[in-house]
Length: 325
Image (cartoon, rainbow, N blue to C red; front, side, top):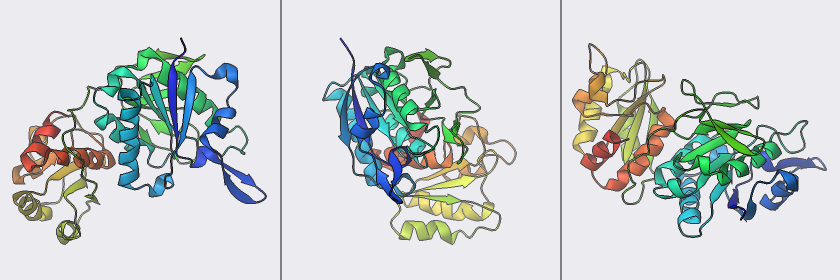
């Protein structure tokens, strides 16, 4: 019996084309019609999703997509789900879906894809990416991998993948980790081991989390201003081994005392360890004033993780959740 896959189409570049000098948007059914029937590895049901462009996508839309992915597998019995998404924030929505998937990750394939070229451009990459994604979502080899991003025939773990090129079709990388696999002739070939599954989500995620890039001379007032504006948590993008300027330490300590978690990530790749485990010489000093380490996550993904962790309802719960990430 053929696998049954749900296609959630959010438009963006994969669905864009020019007609009479105006931008036209293909529906999910139109996208599916662009894939030759003999290249479809599953029966596909299409749902068009109203969504902002990827570069302007709201947390509410991201959460709605993640919840629909989960319910499609657990409640509706689909063997897999494919989400077409703009590439700018594709990695964030995919990671959110991964964190909220729960048991859906072991029951069906969860695949996000997009395109770097419009449908009417020469050698458009969207139709091939879509065909490969449907094949991946239907393939049992993808069970337990959690959410993945499928582009350019490669499969990347949502936790590791990053958009590294805004112009070419080989736009995504998991470096220094390898891709989880690739799609060849409609089947998944595994290349690497998936990251461990994240802790189970608890409660409802918070959508208001601030992300602040630190720099020499940064004013600590930026942190308190974000909280005054309504942020329930703050992610700081530091340098090196999750270092942030000492001028922020008092503000971090105060926010922690107020029950506002502060997570420190890095603009570099770091080890997947707790921040306090980095404390050696001048590394990881923010742990001493209450900051939580991002466990090697890039800052944008640390923000997604903190949104989910805040569902635990307490600062202690957030810390424990990150310890298990």
